[in-house]
Image (cartoon, rainbow, N blue to C red):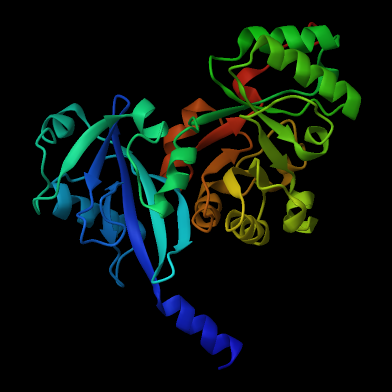
Length: 344
């Protein structure tokens, strides 16, 4: 059998499934798989098979109505990612979406059974993330993604500040509690290490996203660190050289880099990507000539990502709804937390 025939045969075995991560006030809705089902005696998020004539989002809406009688048509349905998993006897592609229900919808879902008599229950986010409710193997990565916020802050460069102390003091004071913070001071490695080390000692609850070239010089016990690959590193590094003990993030600008990122996600834990530039931004003057890719092109590219996408480039909190409608999980940017020096 030729390579193309084998590929088509393997693809035909893939079961595409829409999965709804339904929540309300830090409570999440889970079903329970009967012992006779595949991966039985485990909890699961609501969802089901996508029909050949449906988009993943259309399949999701239909399945949620059929399973629990809840219509998400008018809710924000936020794309998280696609999880591809081979169980041996079958391969699945789980199209994961996050959706917050209204108070009325939550009240209507207080019964203990779904439409088909299956058990359903609300569980706390803390217990879910603590893995107190065993999930099918393919669902575990969803728990990683649920730790992501809708907004990621990015640091300004060190040269925007009068001194290293000013840089550290500013972010130590201004960063919100439990923020995800992409730290890119754009300084020499030893200086970057000093800045990061000092800041994290003061704000150890921050989840730092650290540039790959800086990370390899750090000597800290950073269990919650996320390693960032820039576009060039994503396109050129041998992924087998990257440790599987860490979580990764990357910068993508086009279809080719998203394809590389999807490949990395098959072997490593990838938390998400920055997809840019959406709009023109002062930090990248070249974008003013092109105006950025725009939301329509961004949306088409974001569809291709198997991991959560964060819109970057000329966006802020006010663009969050547009980002959700454009297949992004959230927004990221320097402007979200901008230090103004006396020279401005």
